[in-house]
Image 1 (tube, rainbow, N blue to C red):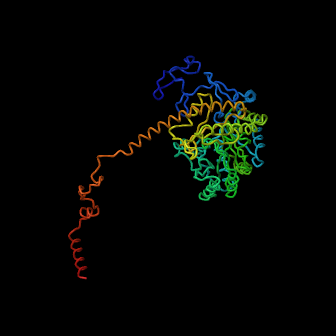
Image 2: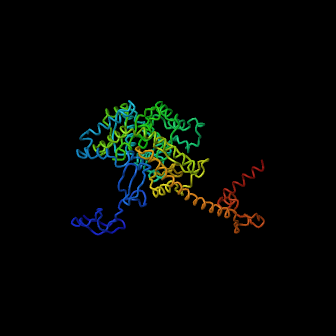
Image 3: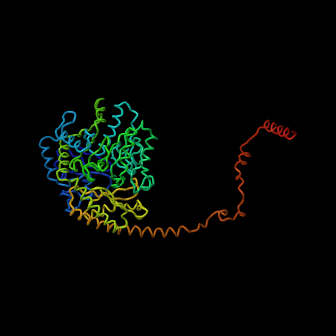
Length: 543
């Protein structure tokens, strides 16, 4: 092989015979070991192993996983049944391409997801991630309307704020500034309507006096864009990363379902983060008496043990598509036997170990403890969520819900402080990703009350240190403000005379009358025109 200069790095040429020179980590001479890049340049610890709700790094540091990674490791780490299911399937076959074979794990997983869904949702399709699930749902919606002769229904509505994924199609549905801004020229049009985020209402109303103004705005938008142009609306049942476990009022979803039906618009539920038992029901939308047209699932679908996602849809939507050439969509690893076998076992563990019930009961205990912390830390403005989907929001003024300055990065600071206290936290921003700070507290569904006590103790120490940091910021801000007050009354001495009111000392500008100047300098009349004007003036005087 030959390793050439890349960027500013110069490395020696290495041929195949020298491959034995690679060290134990597989690094060749002349190459940096930190070749992997992600979102930033921060140095992270190296993970070693996981046991239940705890993770250990290679230095022996123990962390309580209070966020299930990215709300995915719902079954904790090192679960023996999950390991056994993976090994068992690996011994048979790991990969079979979906256009060449079907496989038993995929068939059985689809059947189980359908059994756990309302009767109308009876068809499943597998992908590799939550972003892909959302894109698949929107593609299915568009292809459905084309199949039934309404190809004009192609627009997809979503909400502000929201998060639906990082691929371009899912990102177009997302409303989270830092993720959207760099790629806006590449994104399809996706009109946004107000999310039911009552703590920071996008349309500045107050519940319940608003009488569900967000739903009314959604209905108006449907008529503005025209129901004949709208294929579907995509919504999260409970707010995820952008609004931090914001639970909508109970009226919201029945009203939304009604206006979707009245306007023949498909209702797509993004259950990627909230599904598979996280909120105390198997699907997040089951807290309300509704039946979506398409549901997206991922994350907890495999408990974090393999990448997989799914959409569950009604045959009313699927059958016309299949009868007109099939679903024009798919991925190489979709429905592969290994991922499906692991996901199948994950759902069985959730059912067998009563983890939906544990999410509800232990989640209530977690919320009680978070509210107790809120009583002791005035910079916690809100505790919200349902089941083991919870969040705390940081504010500088609890009464007015005023966020801290964005440059203070309060949630990010809390995450780093938490790491030092052995707790993993999930920081995000509540105001479109541009301001506001919250932490998602979403431990594995396997967590016990004793482990919740440990979580709260570590979080308490984290908040105590965060308070010290905020006091420093506030002191510095007070000093800066005091300095600004002095500057505010500083008088400028070198000013023009007229600015001091000395009008007698100011000579009039010759060109102040712009119109007169233009007449004198720029209107040139020839002799014949001047004679004609003089004659006309004389005639006017005679009359």
